[in-house]
Image 1 (cartoon, rainbow, N blue to C red):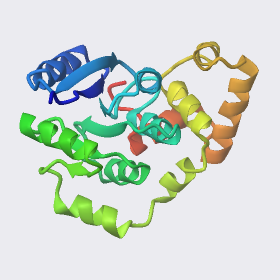
Image 2: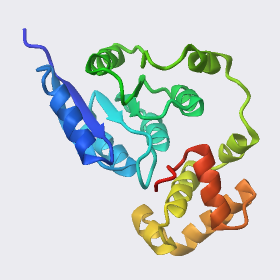
Image 3: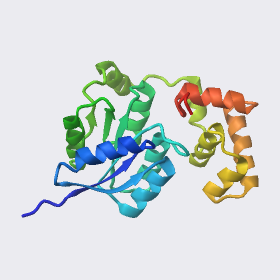
Image 4: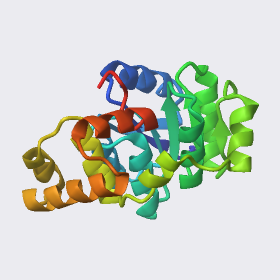
Length: 221
């Protein structure tokens, strides 16, 4: 009896990464790439439309980062398993994503065999962590070390405020954010005001520095 293919969506803002991952996965005849996405919002939309078995995605994506995209995918009650493929071995990322319920966290220097293992584990309902992630990171997750005051402030933002927050620090205008989120400019201004108040910030420069410290955006952005 022919094996039903495992359907996968690949999400990364770098075309060469998506192409390389597609080529690698398509060497396994039971893996089928059904879609690709370049940013977090597109990833959430593609998962909703295509309902793949697995989505493999980066953290550092524009418009909506991988952490918030993963959160939205999980909140939509989808059965899609999430595997993070990132260059970051940041304890906070791993802890937060495991709390959200991702099925795997791999570093981009992982061997190709590790990616295949992660997919197999995910469809079985198991969790796979990159072997190069230190035991200290795993201990940190298990022990659930106390969050910093900065992280606690960020946790007070709603999902919508986090979307607006990322686009603000990436330099999008109020008008453009309103267009992307299908909201009025006045609503975006209200969200911006609420964000500044909750995070105890009084200007955009401080907001950008805060986003970099938390890893919401990369310094290169």
